[in-house]
Length: 437
Image (cartoon, rainbow, N blue to C red; front, side, top):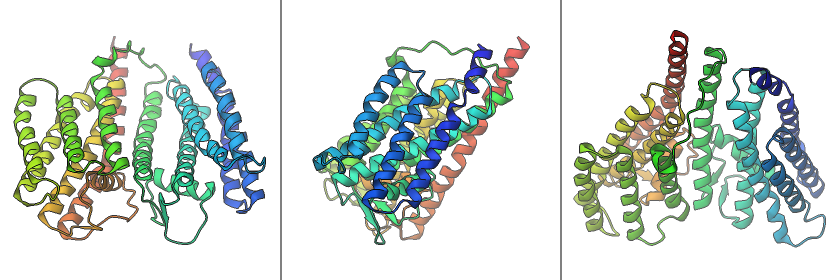
């Protein structure tokens, strides 16, 4: 098995893919914003699709799906030259985004399941990161074509793939200059998803590669996968992610009823993460009080009921973070539940930050500029601060809000470092136990 893995790692597929991706990024930077320049860029993007397909062609399903997606997306990219209807052009960015995500998912299995750290392994981890950047860039372009008001450009500029590739890279690297900002709900949800993915991917990739190197390529055998209803932390991560992205995407559609329903769903998801037992029963009482107070405050909100409700939410989410940290990060061995738990912790930190911002806004009107009171806006602000992206479209304007923002940003900086240290430590402990046996 080791020899087979090493041969596969030296196949050079990732090197070819990296060259293809580098060529695409170079073409995006120098290609003129003309029909010829866009056609050249589309051609190179199609070639990079083929390189991704070749690098991941050991998966028959991806091979079949990739041929279909690459062909259809090529028709979309060249639709204007072929004289096809304008709607056909949407196929290019939409299908390319789907294909790049699928290729990144399959390639990540090849990279992170390796038992030796080689040059090709390192190149592969870079390729996955760049594929994710192109996938989100195509998704941003697709949203912009559907809704030209989904993004705001502070200076005059184009809305070509090159511009959205720039936005994608500064978002995933959590740089966030703010000259291009998402303003629509779906665009903001994608930005939150991408910035969080960029932070967690870097931490997990570094921890994984260091762990493989530390234990000398002797990884423990994978545990059999549990039924879906027993994978508590994985299911919690899915629930929390959806309940964060939905309010950011759709806003306050439905008024106070939706806001209160989403708040209740988030709190119940946190209780699910806490697990059964005495703590969950104790937490059920303040949760019920918070929901009653949120209902009492109604559409207008404000006043003592809202302050007490948000204060209770802050405390409940803090308790959830503490318990999940004990159940997931503090486990004695590395497994998927540790990674799912790390994701749950990160999302819960963002939810806790949104509740904290809501409490700050109630304590001091005008704490944020422009005023952000909807749950989607507060979640967006919290995750943009946690990932240290900070586009600058929503800003703290008083001392309390500024201190909260600084504290959340510090959590976002230190969390990946703590995660890497913990995962490497667990891997070293597992290796030591295997040697002693």
